[in-house]
Amino acid sequence: MSIAQNISEIKSKIDINKVKLVAVTKNHSVPAMVEAIAAGITAVGENRVQEMMAKHPEIQAAGKLVEWHLIGHLQTNKVRQAVPLADLIHSVDSEHLAVEIDKTAGKCNKRQDILLQVNVADEDSKFGVELGQALPLAKQISQLAHIRLCGLMTIAPYADDPETLRPVFRELHTLFGELKALNLANTDIKWLSMGMTNDYQVAVEEGANLVRIGTGIFGSRKY
Ligand SMILES: *Cc1c(COP(=O)(O)O)cnc(C)c1O
Image (cartoon, rainbow, N blue to C red; front, side):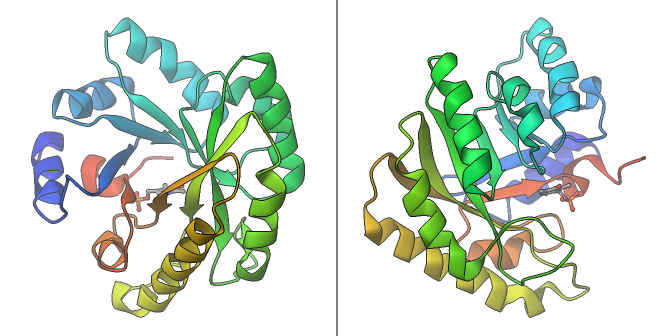
């Protein structure tokens, strides 16, 4: 199937008025991205700052306007490069990183939208703050005036049967409600980023309103 057909297939499975579809473009070419944007994609997700920096000017040169989402782990030494380009950073998981983002955003005269990445399943292999530490971290981050905390993100464990991940998504949705109810300063809690190619339908059923899909749009990645 073509990229456009894949996109319309995904759009037929989610309510596109309520769920934002971010096309995960890591390891995919600029022409493939341009094709996706022509087929209606309005937001792209990259997981490496370097790759985002390389593609950003090319997409602009092609005359394409999209939101850029940084979805991969962010090292503090890459913050200076990431902040000017990223519309939303999904992967904030420490106060230290948030402070760096805040400093850089201040210098750029920008309010940086971010999400907290939560390691719901508590996997050793995953970045993200532990479930129990997420609200305390949100409170610390809400002190930072150049950051706007917009919600939560998780990467679920891999599972052959996505149905088994339902409790993971449900837990993050509950935490999302608790975070909203805190009404913290410098926040606008509106995005619950969960769901990838294998599990997005379950994630959306459990309250996701932003899904990050790569393989389902572009096919498998060549590394
Ligand atoms: C690669 C990646 C995705 C997309 O994964 P697919 O299975 O290809 O849809 C989503 N989120 C993050 C954080 C990723 O790194």
